[in-house]
Length: 458
Image (cartoon, rainbow, N blue to C red; front, side, top):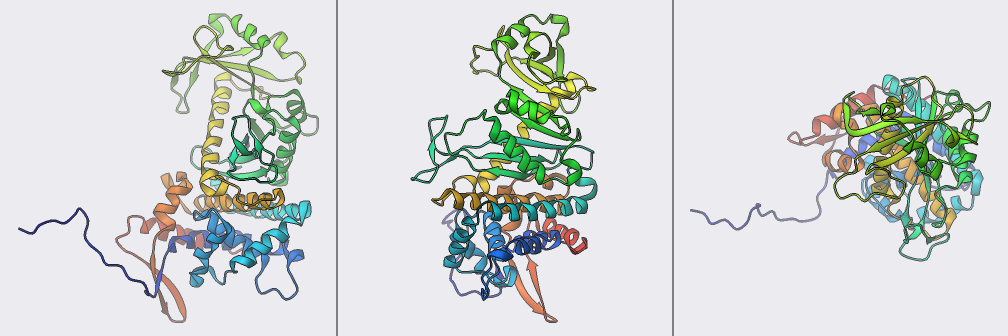
């Protein structure tokens, strides 16, 4: 009988191997860049910031950093992972060149940001056309979720300040287009703010919404087919009035703070007026009811606003607030959608929780920290993070099916991007040969087939 020496076989490791590509699954992102036309759009946008005799294209450098972030990198030097695989990613600039470019772009100010955002908007419209029935606007309505994110700083940085949670860092305002139950979501705004920026600042919500609308196709930048959804941070008179302004006519579903007037109105709602809340599959939601409020609590708000409240049994261990009533947790939101039952509207607003999934994905894709010192540099970093998140949303949208479309960045990296392959040359062409026994090799190859079948841009 042979004596065991451990649970795993012993394998000796040595360097110097050739013909093997790590992170070979990243060709999915490279092909997404190619088919979406993002490389050409970003390069064209950054032409004014390219030196006459520059070796590296600024647009290519920026996309390389975004690809490194999408693959899990959290600093500029992580672009070295791409530099080690020129057969897949092409020539990659050195770390000093990358650093100098970020500093130069940061000095470009609003002009640079406008150029980048315009290029992203053009590519986004093209990607949605390629996606067809899977596009976010295929159902006739687009939902944009606006929410704040706390980003901690562990050293002195410009505009880093104490936050409302007694931490230290920044408080950017993010916006995401919801892809619905069958998909994820993509970023449309990242507004960098100091850590002490307020949660209910109407001016910031208006600016963020303007930037988010500019990322949508022109036909969706006004009108009821575009829904702006926020938590109670957007529940201010100024912001709601701006959304409902004549000529803009946006739909909204905005969380509201339970004021004393709303609390008193809830206490006057008769038992017969409460309707059981529903789940996405149509079943009754256990222990939750909804009702529509009227009366003085609507005074001062725009015409057509509906105030809907939900009461629900708190989860075990949850503490009630002063604004709760009769042992029930109360939440409230306002909407201007008229011809819909309140249960449907409440379910739609509750699904705003998917924005938390998008924020979690953003934290896993570079937003865990903003490593640079100057605010202008960190705003460029935030734009790079959004490009990385765009790629992580567009690739599943165009190439994956079923449950794979719901995979978040960490799972995509583990199952797809981290796959290694053998690099071979045949007939003057290079091929990546994936391991046949890989558990997700067929997912990668099928996704690449779908991407190759798409038309080339322009």
